[in-house]
Image (cartoon, rainbow, N blue to C red; front, side, top):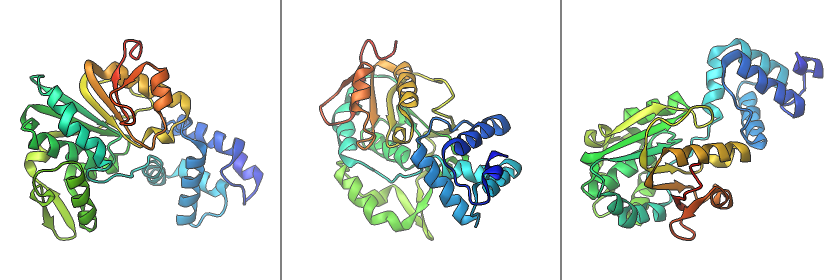
Length: 284
């Protein structure tokens, strides 16, 4: 109603945007109010353009009355940027130091948080396989977006990124051929079943759902950058509570969270690595 009163050309700004986000909570139970506003506005405008809606009032009315459009909005808002062996320098450190250290555990539990379409989880599974640890590892891959989770569960990935995937795999210290793990299936690459069977894809919201296991390794890269500071703090606290005392947290190099992580009691594994241990004060 507020957007309609503001006129046909009203845009997702200021109080109109806040009222819309509050309406999503009351109508659907989904809360995007702690997402960074610039990212929210950009993605809403992008959807408005796709559906040829010039005014925010029309868009708001459509989303609140059409579940399919609301689900499309949900699919757009969480950012699904990923690739196999993304940030290969971090995966090389995991391969050479972190995972060999964790190999003393009889069962290694890993969490790919905000996994998007699953390439990160499969990358971790490949590294575990090459280290001989996959068969005694449980790998949880979670995301807010059910469409991306379905894609990850299918183990099908676009073939056009094959050259970049190969390069990242080698940059991560891969000892075999990347192609040994995925077979060509038309325009897609199909991940091997022995990798797929070790990954549990599970819908979980970092913003409003609690811890669900204890992990030796949590990987959450380039997700928290889209949250505001208070929500980042809340999620980091949840990660601390989810980690074993000997566990590790891997954040994205682009997240800009080093200062906040240190303030919350995380201890850097190595300067500049964006990999952390849980300090005594982090989980409190």
